[in-house]
Amino acid sequence: MKKILLINDLLIGGGSETVIRLEKDLLLKNGYDVYVLSFGENDMPSTKNYVLSQSRFTGKLNKFILSSKMKNNITEIIDKIQPDLIHLHLISKYPLAIYNSNGLNDVKIIQTLHGPNLFCATGWGGLKNSAPCELGIGTKCFARGCLSLSKTLAYMQLKERYWKSLNQKIDLFHCPSLNMLNTAKRFGFENSKFFPLSIGENFKLKPQKQHQKRQTLLFMGAISEQKGVQVLLPALIKIKKQFPNVLLRVAGSGNLLEQLKKESINLKLEYNVEFLGFINHTEVRSFYLSGSIFLMPSVWHEQFGLVGPEAMACEVPVVGSNIGGIPEWLRHNENGFLVPPNDINELALAVIKLLKNDTLRKKMGQDGRKYVLKEFGGEKFSFELLKMIKSII
Image (cartoon, rainbow, N blue to C red):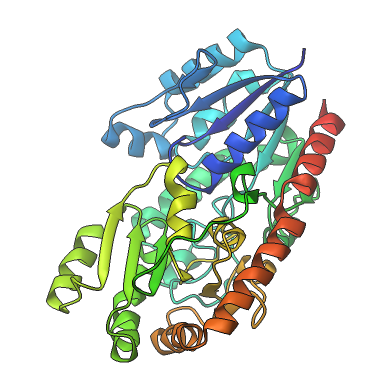
C-alpha cells in the first residue's frame, strides 16, 4: 500500500483544509495509506495525524530563521512514516524547516499553490490597492509601499534560502487556477499543472432553502483587509436605504473583527449585521442555505476562492471582485456579478439589483448550481488528482 503524507499550515478553517479533507477521503477510497501533518490547530483527530507547534513569537521568528528543532521534528515524522509521496499544501508558516528537511531528499513531492506566497511577500498577489503587479520579491516591495524595509529584507533573504532548490525538490506544482498557472510558468516553474478545486460531496445534495424572514447577505472568510471586509458596512448602508430590513451575516475570525463590530455599532447597524465568528466545516452548508446573496469583495488576488462555488452549489448567486481567479468561476450576468475591488458603490448596486428582482436572483442561483456541479462537482478533481499522483509515484 502506497503511503502519502499531506502537509498544511493548519487544519481548521480555510480552503486548503477543505481540499485536504476531500483529498484524504479520495485517497483512502482508492487504497492509499494517508497521513497528515499540520502546524497548529487541527480538528482531524487520528493516530495518523501529526501536529507540530511553537509559541506565537517563536513561530513568527522561525518563518525567517531556520529552526533546527522544527526541521528535525519534521524529518523524524517523515522518516517514521516513510511516505512514497509528500503533498505540500499551504506551508507559509515554516517554509525553511520544511524545504530544508532531510526527509524531502528521497521522496517524490507535489506542491499545491493555494496562494501567491512563493511570488509575493505580502501574499496578496498584487498591490494593496488591487492593482496588478508583475510579482517577484525584491526591493520594489518596499519602494511601492507594500512592506517596511525590514520586512522586505527579511522576505528577500527568505526567498534566497529556498528559491533555487524549489525546482529540484518539487516534482510537480499543482495550480488551482489558470491565474496561478500563468504566474508559476512565468517564474520558471515549467513543472506546473492546472486543474481546479472541487466542492465537497455534501454540496451535491439538493438544497433545501431555509425560510428567510429577511433578505440576507452572506460573507464568510478571514475578517481581514485582503478579504475586503472594510467595504461591507459602507455598502450595507447604501443597500439599507432601499431594503431597511436587510441582514448581513458575517462568518469568520480575523484581526479586523473587533473593529468591524465597533463600526457596526457606530453606524447604527446592529439590527442589520450578525457576527457569527468562526463556524465549523459541518455548519458551512447550512450557513449558505440561510442567505439570498453571497458577497466576496476580495482585495487580494484570490487564487480560486472555494467559498464562492460552494455558495453557488447551494443556489446562492455571488457578487465578487473581478480579480485573481474569481472570474474563472464567477460568470458575470450568469451566476452573479463581478464588480471592481474596493468599489463600494458598484458592490451595493449589484446587490440591490438582485434583491429587487426575485426572478433574476433565483435564475442566477439555479444556473450557478448547474455550472458548479458540472465544473467543480468532484469528478474532474478526483480524476486529475489521482492521475497526477500516479504520474509521480
